[in-house]
View 1 (tube, one colour):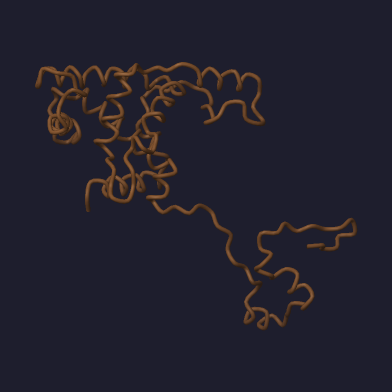
View 2: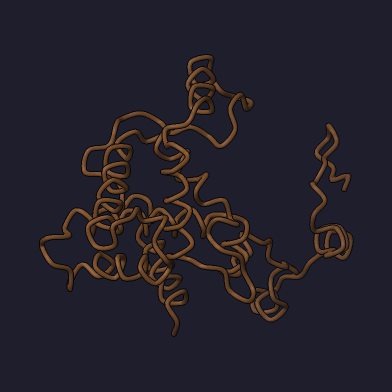
Amino acid sequence: MDRRESMKSMLLGSLAGGLVINGCAPDKAPEGPTAPAEAGVYGRTDEEKARDQKLMEGEFFTEPEIGTIATLCDLILPATQDFGSATEAGVPEFIAFIVKDITAYQTPLRGGLMWLNHRANKKFTKGFNDCSEAQQKELLDEIAYPEKASPEVAQGVDFFSRMRDLTLTGYYTSKMGIEELGYMGNRPNVWDGVPEDVLQQYGMEYEEEWLAKCVDQSKRDVLAEWDDDGNLLT
């Protein structure tokens, strides 16, 4: 099993017990509802619309910070032969929105980015994004495995764990990620009535008129309509 398959399995296991993002949330999260992906949708109160609009305005991360986030996302989930990378799925944009919606993420993520650049400067005398891919992976190897990491890099371990969880959440809730998982969503079952042997067991049978109206798979997506007297029209 390759690294990407391992992470996919980890995500699916996490989904069985709750959304991944809950597991990487800071200890103290602000109270209140989260914003929808699109502001001004039907059914929002004026207060909610104002909050949504505020979330859509401005950015928290600087361009260099979002550039480092994009690099990290693609190191965590690079492109494969069949599917694109985390950045192609819009994960950096997802993280940029999350820190505005859940502000408790702001300090840990910005502090983690600062720590990562400091670590890169200490080891390679240059910022993380200026390092080669091999150097970047060497830095991440120090913090990607909590059980093996030294106390010296504890802050980096916390930061990378949070980034990894956010990357997985962003990717596997995107259109591309859902396609990779093969998740089809809810689908209506084919129902052709009570099985014939059960009907015979209880001495019952369907009236042909109603059977023709109610068990017609070609009309399975048609909504039933009734007249004022309770007669089925469709």
